[in-house]
Image (cartoon, each protein chain N blue to C red):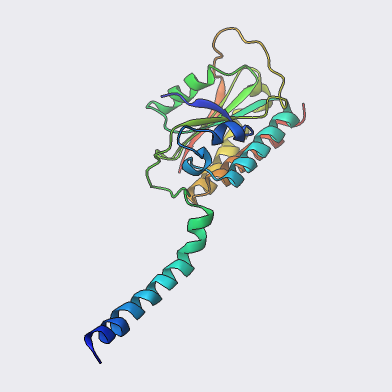
Length: 76
Length: 140
């Protein structure tokens, strides 16, 4: 076997197999959920605030800041 | 650090960022955003309470920050503030919404949400929390 053949058989083929397996294992989740949250990882997205559709709740005029009364907290 | 108010339903606005598709850069996929939107809208419509979800960092003391955010909402609002980076969750109720949602109901929802968050399912946890809170509040 020439040097090129040796490299092809012992380097290129194993690399190809590894790449194929990696794609088979992680490919689907990379495509479907590129930005999935994992506990303990840093969160680098800008803060966002989601509100319901305006027609779901009738807007009510508001005077001054509303005081928070109750609720709950938690950590994970 | 205050959040920008974004309607989860207003995906048009969300996608017109200066850098192109905001849904791709943001934490949630388009499908997750539509789940979030559906849960928010349904629970608000059913209960007559105004549910909103804040996802982002909370400056310490986190509770005070969440309550400061709540000041911008009205009396029948319920704020779910989630900070994935700090692994913190705060539910805040106002003078009117607390009558429908006692702290016990909020604590139960928070417990269920924590379980999903610990598994890395942010949207699932938020949707579960919204569903539990709207069940506890009942119909208007």
